[in-house]
Image (cartoon, rainbow, N blue to C red; front, side):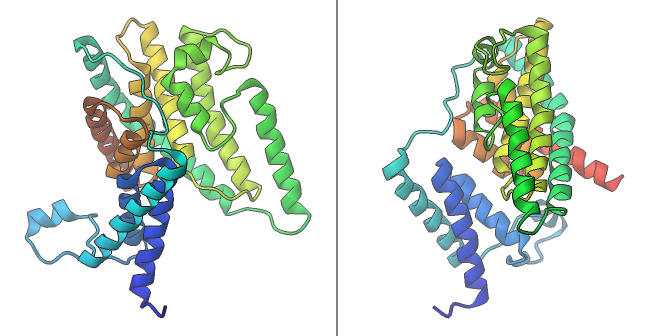
Length: 311
């Protein structure tokens, strides 16, 4: 259609966000994803001189033309509605009814502070492993299929003991939203009836396995993104710490802790707290106070990572 280059970039970014929005029923997160893609490609315009204080406030906020916003919003909206005809309008994950009394809210506030450095470290580890793996992918008609076979064999072997491990991470997130039933029903560790410290320890191991095997698959030449693996790593991290805190007598809602961890890891790995929290909220329908806690956690986690970078 002989469109100019800037318009092509907008359409590509809108299509990428629309694909995300359609598959996971997350139109708002899809819009943010599109805008972030444009900002990462340098396709946005600088803000005018609005003063020092507003300059700081707008730092990192992409500025698009009004027509660009219309394109991004319309594409994401149409993609989502089109997918409804096949996938339905329900959320991907069913968030259980959880308590929000004073003891649980106090414990949740403690997790917000603790989760920031932990989620930041987990996101950095996932990013580091993925980058190094993708930089050394094999080529050739013999090495590539051989490496892929070995990688998938390792994943299959690990799945014998960890049934929720394979795939893009959906199994781990579902397990984190009902961790007690999963730990006692053999979903966490096949054939095991777990609770307390052992369950927390196995969830922590699941974090490490997800990061390591994601790296193994990428190193073998298997192409894929890090969005849902980041969600899975954060959810398993939140479940591990939540189950451990529960053994200490704290009033813990593990699903709440899991989704705060998931949103925080995505916030760091995809460099946007708004995207991480919106994604977690649209996927599960988080209560408002959990979404607010996730927003604070993601901001603190990004601050921790930024401090490490300056160091």
